[in-house]
Picture 1 (tube, rainbow, N blue to C red):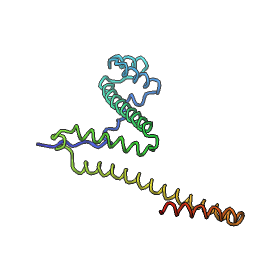
Picture 2 (picture 1 turned 180 degrees about the vertical axis):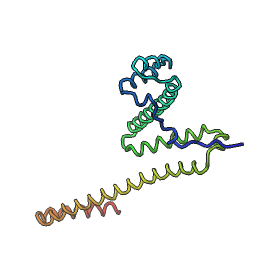
Picture 3 (picture 1 turned 90 degrees about the vertical axis):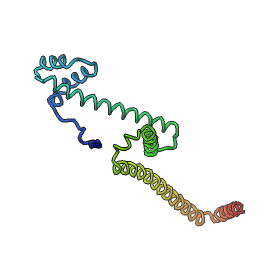
Picture 4 (picture 1 turned 90 degrees about the horizontal axis):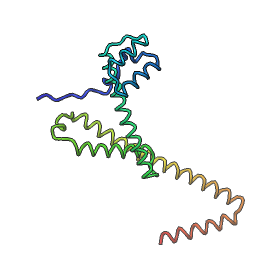
Length: 191
């Protein structure tokens, strides 16, 4: 029993045929005709009327690639909507965290819906690579959060020091009063 090998994404890139090289207005009309389910012979006649000779098989190939592009666009649009909904549901999330959450949810759905036979077809190295990528993204996000928090704390400490230094020089009485107040609050917190 042979295992199916999945083709890398780069193999799905569109080849540039005659329709790809059409002027934008003609190409847009062909694509609109495809979207409205016109027959290939109708598209062929339209192009012939506009001085372009294309076979029906070339139109068919273009239609297959165009349909695949439209499917990818629809999936990307749905993913974007889901991300925006996640951001609306949890306004404190940034886009990176929303993407990680959505990816995790989709991964768990895919895991739950994967049959035993499909698991046998997945290359272990590919599965590990994908899992590692997800873990790295989550770890990177956490590291950035910690770094931002450290930077914020350092900035606040620098501002606090500037305020206290200026207060000590210009208003020693206020500095003394604020220092006593802070010491009292700190002692209350320790008890």
